[in-house]
Image: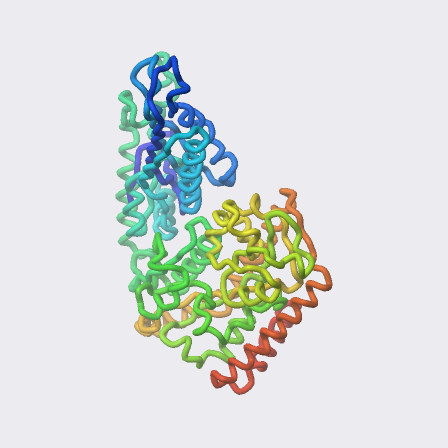
Amino acid sequence: MPATAAPGLPAGHFYFREGAFLASSDRVTVTFTGKGGHGAMPQLAVDPTLPAASMVMALQSIVGRNVDPHHASVISVGRLQAGSSYNIIPETAELELSVRTLDPVVRDTLERRIRAVALAQAQAFDCRGDVAYERGYPVLVNAPVETRLAVDTARELFGDERVETPATPLTASEDCAFFLERVPGCYLMVGNGDNGYDQGGHLGPCSVHNPHYDFNDESLAPAAAFWLGLVSRYFSDSPVTHAQTTLNLSNWVPPNHFISTDILAAWIEEVEEATEGRVRIRMLPSAVGAPEKHWELARLGVADITWSNFTYEPIRFKSLWFSEMPLTGSNAVASSVALWETIEAHLSDDPAYDGVKLLGVGLLGGGALHHSRQPMVEPQDLRNQKLRMGGPIQRELLEAFGAVPVAAPATRGYELLESGVVDGSLHPLESVIAFRLESQLAHHTLFPGGFYDASFFIGMNERKWNTLSEADQEAIMSVSGEHLSRLWGERFHAQNQAAEEQLREAGNQFHEPSEALLERTREVREAMLASWVEDMGEMGYDDPMAIVDFYENRYQALDSE
């Protein structure tokens, strides 16, 4: 549990933040190469200072126009160097940048845009542009359990008035981020006061990395008391510290995504409380494999617990295709709970589930059709449109309308839209906001019951599950199964509603499908369902429609609650 003394914050005060606290830090060197020459005859040279100077301004458009204002990012030009004499046009000009962000997804966006901007400036001024992009410190992410332990310790010792949580995240960086990628922990800050540096003509506290920095000895006593209290609490009767079993959970979305914070972290806390601390779940700082491999990663025990989309493995989970078909339902709570009950009633003996203890399932609450330039309201509007999608149902649906499906994860949506590779994309509304696509997707067509859906699982390696005591298994399932599926649905429902409100406020356009588009969608659904029934019969299911009927009846009952 590392800490730092922070200038400018009241001495002896403690600052904590769960999740992303400090930024990633990357070092970028951009070199423009032209043709040197005499300053009196620039027409005979190719001046690399022009793209260098232009890039200084163009870089600021990345943060201002390509990054959501809610996600702090910094691009600073720390060095711009060119030439050796006033009357010589240099052959090269070089910039060094410091690039920082609190979001791993934004980090990828910044790198992509910096490379694109450098290339564009080079081409505009007939130079060669080279980018050396060195990724340094990752985003520093504090684990939920360890952060709560530290906060509770500080509050017990010093009271609420000297503890701030959640503290404001900073765009500074720390090598402790590497440790926290491997081992869950909590990085905190202890106020160092103003050092008396507001006297003698100086303004404000003296920052670190400054030769006048002076550690405030007044912070020593409370800091020492905190560490002693933390150790004492750790080895006390706290459930956190007496966990008999620690399970690793592989998570492939960013730590600040609502699935991480509002579903997984919330459920982890419930599990630890239900087992009275005997079972602890550690959310790994990075995924142990690609999203589409996560069922197999759980089955093999590479991670104890994983989550992902069932139909990333479409053949293995053919039995669940019915839940992703068009017009199935737009209430994420009802659909998620109905799917859990359907699996329990009709599919639990399917060998596809062997090796994994299913802990919960979820649906999106209906996906929508989004386009960058125009409304999608008639069947012909979709023809020849390149649309990002994922999963077999979405592919089959788009092909039936004459669209061109482009398979890619939702995390690549911005890149594909910005570069013009696709014209639109299939997403639930929450994903448009979560993946920062609101500026790229201006038109949203909402279908009653959803244009499609996607089914997800949270599962645990079965061998690991069998090592738990019956009491712990029962305690875990008391907050899993239907309970966890309902939690999933509630969080997605809330996020979809908030996303719609935000998009409408931003001026994005919402559309309803025409009756012709709806009727064609119903026809496609019926054809899909008939094909699925035939396939399920070949898999040994005597009455596949009984599964669909059970699901639809349970959905209707839950939706009317």
